[in-house]
Image 1 (tube, rainbow, N blue to C red):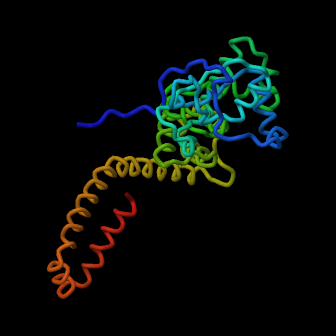
Image 2 (cartoon, helix red, strand yellow; image 1 turned 120 degrees about the vertical axis):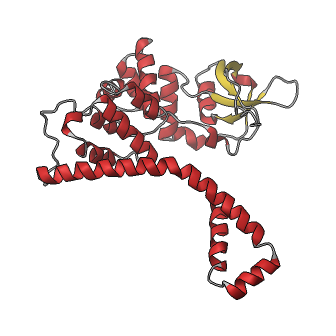
Amino acid sequence: MQQPIKLAFQPEGIMIPVDRILPLKKINPRTKQTKKYRQIKASIDEVGIVESLIVYPENNKSGNYLLLDGHIRLEVLKGLGKQEVLCLISEDDEGFTYNHKVNRLSTIQEHFMILRAVEKGVPEERIAKTLNVNVSKIREKRNLLRGISSEVVELFKDKRISPEIFRVFRKMKSYRQVEVAELMIATNNYTVPYAKALLAATPKEQFVDQNKSKKPIGLSPEEMARMEKETEIIEKDFKLIKESYGKDILNLVLVSGYLSKLLKNGRIVSYLSNNYSDILPEFQKIIEAVSMEN
């Protein structure tokens, strides 16, 4: 029976007095002069804490908490005279590898954060100042998902991708947007050039504006048609490979395990070495390859 997955944090954050949070390291005074520190200070001053501090209860009844992540944010809060802050409670005190567990804001998460701030009445100018960008960038981020399929939003919700990707997607109909998004995820390629290449290979009838030219400079209509056909074939082949990949890996692991048991038998190794010297090294390569993958 599969064991339940243990959450790294308690699901709900709690407000904790700032003076009850004990940092695990000191902030160098020179850190306060850096651009990063000033940006964090401006962000907290303008819109408050976006990313909660991560703490772990001290191993006694003092009511104190050890700070695992957010040392600069805590220092800023103290400087601003804040009395308490929303924190997430970690289930372990593993501070050294904590950052591997953090999901930084994705492009879509940032979009929703800006929308929430605007809905709460925060002026765009203040948000721009906080993120150290001009107001036009904030408006661009606010309108990021206009014309984007809800399925694509769900697929890309935790991906850190360029906003330019969504400008490319707006030129395609919803079902083609989903196809392209799935292909980008399957290939783990979220670059703008790749998105544009998939756009170029999109049939005319799958464009929002079918009268708009999509022909890249230097390509004839015949070359475009051939490119579309080849891309369609590649997409189908890739999906077939993706479907069979898990089964193939499972078979490889089973075969490797069986070979590993065989080669632990000295008599079998001796027999193979004397009679099938060309096969024995190949068996060993299979075992080593799977071992390295694991």
